Image (cartoon, rainbow, N blue to C red; front, side, top):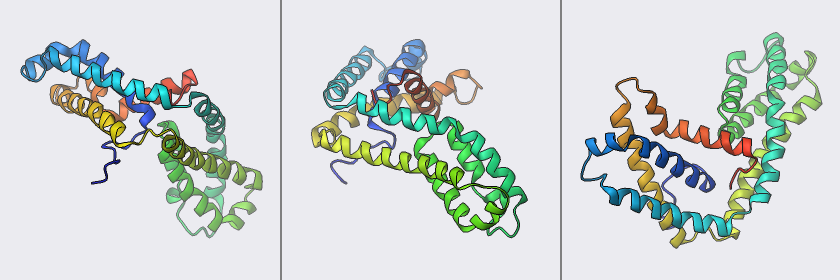
Length: 237
């Protein structure tokens, strides 16, 4: 296994916010966790969890360029905000166009809309790539129904920015030496606590229709982290 491989597939900049949200949920529900696994959720668990958060915090604070991330984020969010109108207009053209190479329902519009609404930037880049490919293959038919070069350019610009953002982030993290063997050990240790809380939280709350389940569902926790980062303008902080 690659010594620099991470055990999670979200951004390093999201690791600490995820851990802190789960810590807050755990403190609220600590009695349930102790009742479920009394040996595993002794006071030492929280002390070790806090130490792992502190260690990762030191690494991130010394290495992450918050200002750089803010600029990239603000540019992308402006394009994302304009996306619903573009998709609605494109959907009408696709519905009316003749002799398309792909069925309207499979054109890729819904996938882009879903990823945009879920604030899934990496997924949005992939779904936009598929949509742009379908537009290119059917451009004459769509242009005949009113699709403009400017609208295509707007979609392409958003895709380019999302792709550049992902590449720039990876380069920035490498330049700042976040992905060292020692740092990866710290990230992995912290994620171990996160993984335990997610798994045990599901065991506690998944069968009773309990509203707490969302607090131990990674997809929901990430959505909250990304929403809060977007509102604060400090994605990657």
